[in-house]
Image: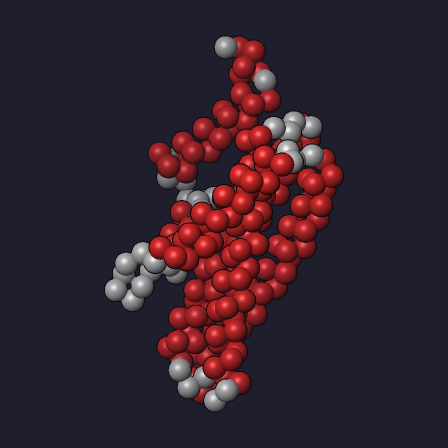
Length: 193
């Protein structure tokens, strides 16, 4: 037992358990991700409040299945970790910039409803949902960076770690389409009026 606790996987499991204990049991709000995930998943509900299955399948199930296929073909290695770290770092910076733009767009819609669209409520809803998706994407990018750094520092590459990194990466990529669609909706409405 002592050997497992002192091993890399054992130590990482203990760290994860402490983080889960702090987040779920003690409800430490300082680093809580609960509201980010909660607001993100609200975007996948219909006006009646029912969960929309098709988007969840498209943006979660398919990326996870794709990760399963890819991990069978190639276990992650240091070169993939390096590429992913660079891509995700750039993507995170881009998402923070987009976040600033969304906040500015929402302020302009609030100040002058005719500025972005005749359909003010639709634009505001799309901007709020885009904000939630961007926050989710930033969170996922940080998770991928943490996983990549753990793998890079420990030089430990196995199926589970590969699957988690691939799945999170594919979820990030697929959810970029959600951001594009929602930004398109706001800007297209304004352009076509």
